[in-house]
Image 1 (cartoon, one colour):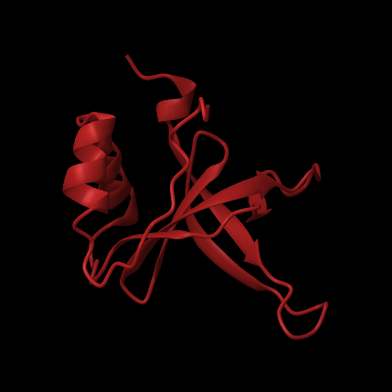
Image 2 (image 1 turned 180 degrees about the vertical axis):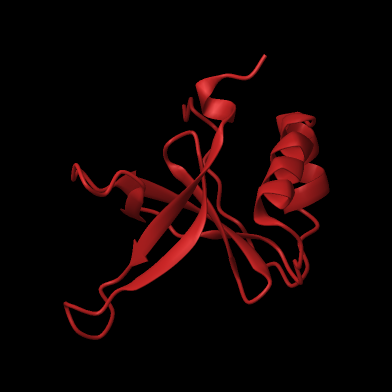
Length: 122
């Protein structure tokens, strides 16, 4: 059964401002769950948290959220919808421990990653 959060839809992301306050770049991509934006940039698959621009004529326009992006893959030359569907299915199929030890721990050229998973500090 497909839920609203499973639906992928085309959207645009406005990056910026850059060097000057009026300099922006518009990127096309795929929106997931109303706040996660996947896009390809020179063969690299990116995931970003985004916020919707509240304007009645711009129903599929988003701006970068309050976080950095995640690079999910390199040398991608396939259809974006297919790639995003495959990545989401792959991540859904694993549990948190598998993700930590099989994906995050073995990243190439990785430095230390700081997570804050311990909720009770005392």
